[in-house]
Length: 76
Image 1 (cartoon, helix red, strand yellow):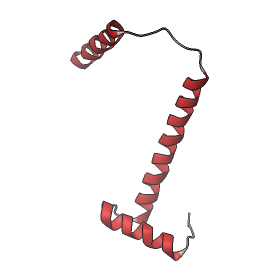
Image 2: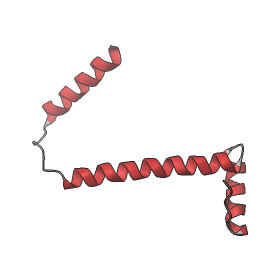
Image 3: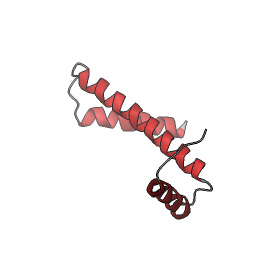
């Protein structure tokens, strides 16, 4: 795949490759695409959450239970 871009964008990509330690412009572009996919996934999750019905109210004991479960998984 070849991508055409104006000289100003090419300069920006080349600068990012140098400054951030990417080996090639292709690696930089792949990273941008991966980040965009993650951003889109997070956006979908947030929109799904916003559209969902409210859950039960949470309190300190709810978070204590979450911490205990997380510690159990980390130890297991």
